[in-house]
Image 1 (cartoon, rainbow, N blue to C red):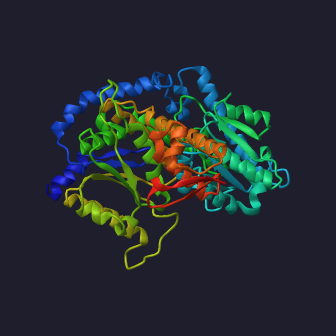
Image 2 (image 1 turned 180 degrees about the vertical axis):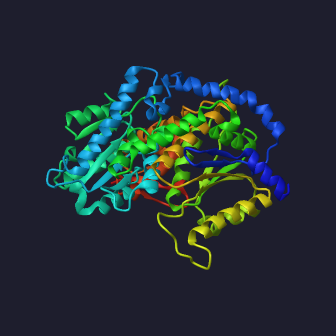
Image 3 (image 1 turned 90 degrees about the vertical axis):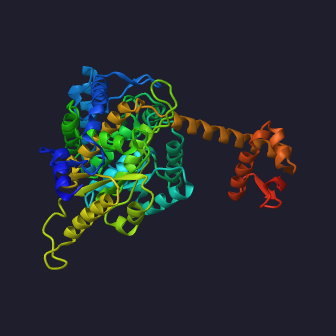
Length: 528
């Protein structure tokens, strides 16, 4: 395809949204016009599926719940007046609370104002807020945001040490729909302990973001935490950034949450248009389907050419992989669907993995994210006629061309600047694209049985650990691994028992091991 043909193809497939100043270019994806026509019936079904979703259809049969994150940014779409009122009230509650924190109306017992925010959550309760904070937080925010997003003790210690003597002026957000998520609960217990050790009242520094009436909500009320904010059972974790989960930390950092919601609402309107060429999310889904033949055969590489969007790829990993990574389709057939997502940033990627992208295995397609505005204010020339931003733009265009020349496909998403409206629009765009693609490949994007299976497996390991410790302590005598496994009726789990023992010993808990470390079967377990 020569340059003139490419230019014409670019114009044929370019999407532009005048209100958002957003461009979407899928012209560098190699698909034929005639092939696109075969997908039109699938897209017509996808448009109807999205309409049913917004109208309140049960979209998550595993939990018998609706999926209504679209209502968060346009409450008029909520299926009942009660839901609309709850959504509107929650936004006002968040704004009032953030203003009270900023003004010092709500303050710690021994200080005039809070200085920091510690967010404790995992998955969608962390990835979205982290992305938005990196993208939008001002250089001098009203409060500095920190995260505990794992149950790693050393990681928790590092975050707590970073707070230092500001612990007494740190506001703690505990985010969990039920209050029973193990990683979040562990983080909360660790943070509570830190406050108690410092002689501080945890309740005077804590707020809950949870389902009304949940175990955590009840604890927050009983212990008189500062406040409790509602999560809704019809909002999944990976689509929760524009709920209280993401909007409270954003508002506390001084980010305009109304602008985020407005950007998302404008994108929702654009992606509700039942026409493939006039719908940017449908065009994205088309590109994904074309690249992987509807089977996820190629990975999605996200390359934002803006430092502030570095964490967008991490956010999209959960949104896309948890939504689309499914063993079975809606008819019960084994399909093993999914699209793997990873990313870096431009032009860092020029010095990282573009070499493989251009000349290595062609198992991917790239999504370039271009930001037109270089910076606020004017730029100096770093060489005659060229600024740093010109170099960044040139590197993006050069990489796009070099990849295409060597048979590598790409999508380009161009936005005018990184601001709250744009970020809200990006979130809404990809949420809808996931829904369209899921409809095309006949899977449920709104449940996650594999995640639940992993949680159950982890619980079984901890149950086995309790049995191991109890047996070692009760016996009080050295035991070889095989005997220990037999005594607790778990001979078929001897490898797991060995790994449990190795971890316990490394942390000076209950046991020591003696024997040839290179031959685990020879080890003897001693109580200590």
